[in-house]
Image 1 (cartoon, one colour):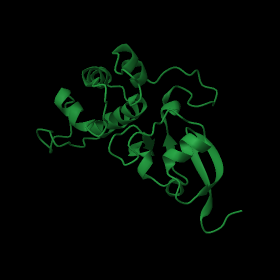
Image 2 (cartoon, helix red, strand yellow):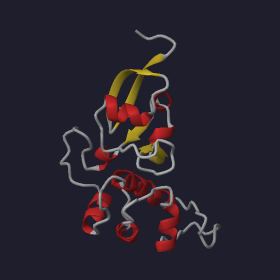
Image 3 (tube, helix red, strand yellow):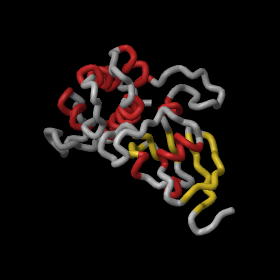
Length: 184
């Protein structure tokens, strides 16, 4: 029964519609993990400081621990499970997204806990750079052609922490995809 503490929502996650009754205080992270069994998105700090919970909301990166699930009605949420070709259970081949493949090829992880957030963030970051969005280290903010060197990649990924310090390989994986011009 819906009362003033719960809401009925339709969430579009990885291309699939989900009708749920949720507590109005539930974060997107908790709904993804606890109600939709999409456990690839990790709960790290639960304060928006580590990036382990990064997902894509309308193709933009967000920390799912900071977003209330009721606020994402009618918006497209993509988790790590939805990046693979075909996403989560919609009949695709399940082939890894190019960024997932690059992380595997470059060994861009150690324990793997931060990896889903790193990958989602990297996919969105490449789109931001392609759109000409500058970062704090962009040499000429008037230049729409952002050169994604290691310094630029590190700055743009600074919201995603890796306690194992696999940063060198993470940067190399992202640079591989950036150099190939592939984002999605």
